[in-house]
Image (cartoon, rainbow, N blue to C red; front, side, top):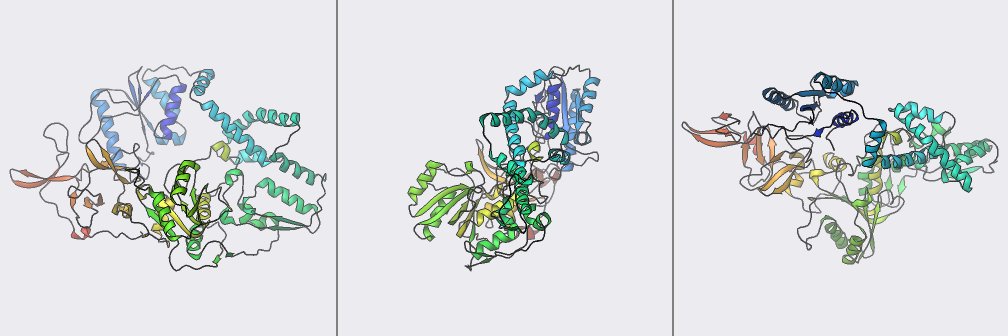
Length: 614
């Protein structure tokens, strides 16, 4: 595993050239100091004694938005200085070379200049290595997915060529289709041999039968339910049936706010641009919901309509609630210290049991099945709360169902969070309907579906240190969400002030080591930044300019930070009296010698921060 795509490309190319490498080994000379940890270059070539660094900057020296440009360049200068001091060979590669397509050429030229001889591995050797760590099996699974998607699309003549031409990785998709062709031929031969057809055959053959006149449609009225989930192939079948009978009427019922099956080929554009696909149209709005109440509707409708491509509509509800009916529990996602201590989910169910009528139904929903309680846990929870009917579903599986109460789990950021940040394989992406430009458009609709399964009340569970961007949006934009149904710690309430000062994207969360408690970045191990808590009360510290201020309103202890190395400043005594000195000062060796005779803080900074919803 490496930490960036650029490093991955470098590693793969070194491998293909037959050059042994080590990733992030400790530098051969000791470099650890109060200002810098032990240096670990990106790559080391042990047979040649050469180091390689891959720098994430463009030609203007700019870094990614979340990386401190000045500190990054200080790091580059420090690394260059070390190699110059110890006379160790260093090859430098840059992000802009990857963007410009010259990365491999630059690497090979520098290797040759340092006298490195290399011979590219044979395809057989690379294939053997790929097979060793399971890449061939993974690719076989991908080919199976491609086969299913290709057949489900029921391409007409020239259709696959158009799909390949539209793809951003056209050459790769074309190569994959060539690899897929013999597999597809074998599969279709097997179907014929056994006298079978699959579901995709049903759609494809039906289209050809109607179009070629082998089937004469007797129907004047066609009704399609759940129309928002329709695919291109099925839309073509419907069009053929409609056009085959004079005066045939097409009636479709669908809700674009609940379109959640793009991964299966559903194309939302047939709903949002219905008239463009099917001609002259009359729209009848079904704008009264009999399931959820006004409180849920206010949150869910407003949330899904942030995407301007969704059809604007005003939902009316039979029941109007005076108070919010979407509730947020904010609590650390930590393991229980004892069996007797209830976890977050149990506390929410306990609350529902206290307010719900006996026999009320409760759905436990998650973006992925592994987030949900397993069968044993569900049985235990059902035994503990016999007055409730507990069921668990993925959000996709609960579509079309409803319960009195809903609890949405896994409201966190990350690959398997909600919204999910899993990336569809680029080859498979090329065979799916065009992706929407609005960020997390389908995930946003999936959240709408989750909330609107509830008749009475919906609960969200989140740890604000790693909270889903959806939860953060609900708070930042002041949606009508209940925040006081469950007690929340000061850290959970002030999460927006406790960002990591190093990577800027993570949050500082409580951690423990053999040396005691501290606050570390939740992006660890990608970010190893850590800070001490307040030395008076142990609470977390927020940053205001150069100051760290305790978040505890009863304490408000403050500590200035060093403008040079960002470490804390401490009061020291010298021959001329007291002064402020950097904590990284060392009598011998490298250290920060910054001092200041006096540091004052603007008392307005000590005003306790608001702990409202924003």
